[in-house]
Image 1 (cartoon, rainbow, N blue to C red):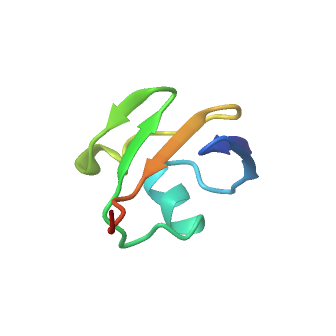
Image 2 (image 1 turned 90 degrees about the vertical axis):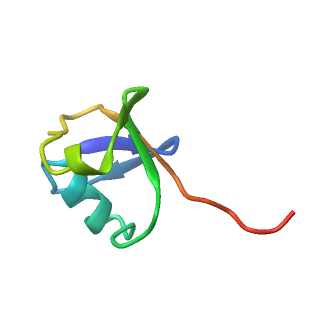
Length: 65
């Protein structure tokens, strides 16, 4: 399936947001997520299914100033 992750088109085999985060290398990271501009809290990621064309945003905290 092809989804957009942070503005970049990506092919994934995952069917849920939780699986996609792991597949894309975000597993274990503290981050905020949204699918199609709708916030998805951590507990809901395993149940949030993805479909072809979904837009996923992954925001991670940055240090520095």
